[in-house]
Length: 286
Length: 286
Image (cartoon, rainbow over all chains, first blue to last red; front, side):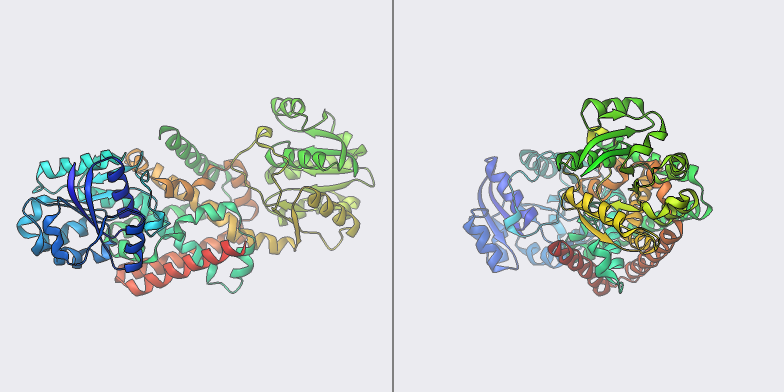
């Protein structure tokens, strides 16, 4: 049970974290900060937060500070709160990339670094804003924590317990492993989906093409409904790992193109079967 | 209203066509042919068909013959039924590619060609078999007919009316236009999805990667659950148009890769915004 939670960025993720902790009876008072006064007012009206924060110095009274802003804003935010953090305040973030957040924390948090616990809840993000927040968003979802060698184990344990109280399963790995892993299973597919929609949209016959697109196209491109700002930030923050994955995918696509060119039905069938079977096995194992 | 309908391939598409026509009161007697005796027995038991066909010569009594088999089997099937077709029997198909089916019809149907109406119902195909068939599968869906210059307008009109009775909207275009269009909005995304799953599955750390894949990955790859045989056939049948689309997509992806390499956040944001907005506009217009 924590006394005061301060959430920066009361949107889908930050708002759902606040709602889930409150529903679990794990928090007494929640202060919300954000760039949109309108969104904060909505969060207050919906009792997602108890109080709209004004002065970042308010973090001095917090037991936990949760940074649920796009990774591109993380540096400025860490710099703004660092001078005001109480000695026992734990700080965690919910950014989609971790090495860059860790680097920013190292740059800004100074002596407070051991009480910073980098985190990433794996929860859909096509919707945004506090209206989309739900107390059950993290039920059965995975939350990854990437503690530093310096991280206080007690701080890490506390953040893990709070996520567990939200219904999430907590996994730990290094920030580098996290970024390599999500470059493959999340960042790459997002770029591929954005690329397909943009490829069609930019064509002279794009409108006619879209008019015949069906449910397969809709599902394939659902992740292209995600926040462009968030994905710009992720591409920049995890560029190296993402570029490796794009290159690997290009090689796979070139190989399939070669099979189509050669009319090699047997090899195409093998690729498609292996893919379908792998996907089926994955879904069964979930 | 037609007297006898003969369906070759009583699976998701052929079975749903039979169910929809029966429910609309448009057909008196339905004969089903197929490679799987088990599937045909299930279709008979579920009253999707009235009779299990034995001799292809039975098509001589049909008012309509519907070819709902994978495009790879279309040639052999056309050759088998051609000698037995009655002079007034209309033949239509439901293949996902059209130019190759038209070429096969030209090769095999001889004098019967004017009563062949090439068609393609745009309906999801991740499931297969008659158990997946539903009378409402084609409600609000598009069916594309690609009549030949020689096609009898009355035959085309009859097939269009039957699809309309199934609840579908019927569009007409040339087979070449159909194939170019679906190479972009259907065949390309399927290849991209198969490629991503195969790319992950083939890696030494594939199992671990899959274990962190989430709902975005699941939706992006849903179309990779489709029939490998069907997609091999489509890749071979529409290879030229598909290769053009893969090349165009590769160029788009290379451009995005360049933006990530250059750290060009403004240009990445523009791509992602354009994609998201185009997708939103498309969904609103549906």
